[in-house]
Image 1: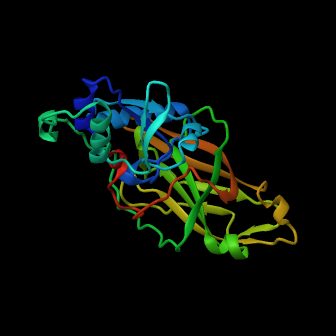
Image 2: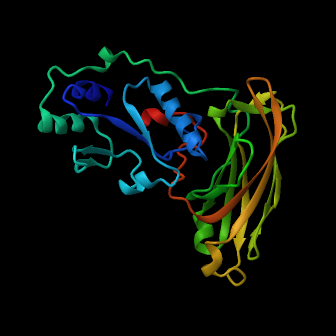
Image 3: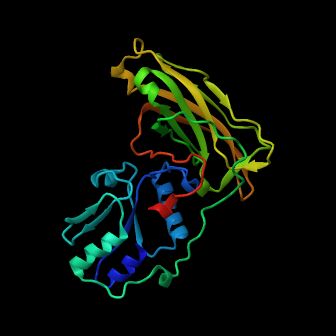
Length: 299
């Protein structure tokens, strides 16, 4: 894409990347941002790691741009000066784009090569050791659900991801995944000399959870950046909580943790989430959970 942009700027074609909700959280360690400011940090990180000359635009937190353009994670559009879409692809294809632009404004000969660009790509941040804690064996067909961080005076240095199994959605009995992930762009790690993360969950009538409290394991390694993850059994009684009220029902989760920064500070935090047991279409899906790869370079 970078070579296409270099060649066709001379023909007055403007190029933009669009930052949208992450399609695959955990790739290269990145997690879904909670605020627009954090999304803009992701944009800055993409510029840093890609070494790109293409400008970035950022979707809002309501994901209106993503929805307006069909919701695909890696789509590609050519738009004329009047704002009309004259070419659209559900998946970005630089070779196909070059061919389309050649038909619209003329071919560029010879085309620029990647080697000629000399892009300086940088690695994603790595703030502490990973692979210290074994990750849970995840059931198949897990799906992200809506997580709503409540107002906090401090950033959410640790971000919650919640998922439920398809069995729960179909039968009212299944698994709830609770994962607390460090945000690498906020520069923090776990200091395992401090007390481990703890959480508690309040459930509405009609929902029963196997354990309303949880504590992360004690880790011998002094510092690490692994997520703190839990699998909890979950049961729904539709006689008590009817389906008409189910989508509005909320679990309330409160988490206590210590976040420690490379600048030297280590502070306790108490933060709260409301969780709805309905699919979050903007939360993305985790692939090869726990493995590195992907990230901005797959955009």
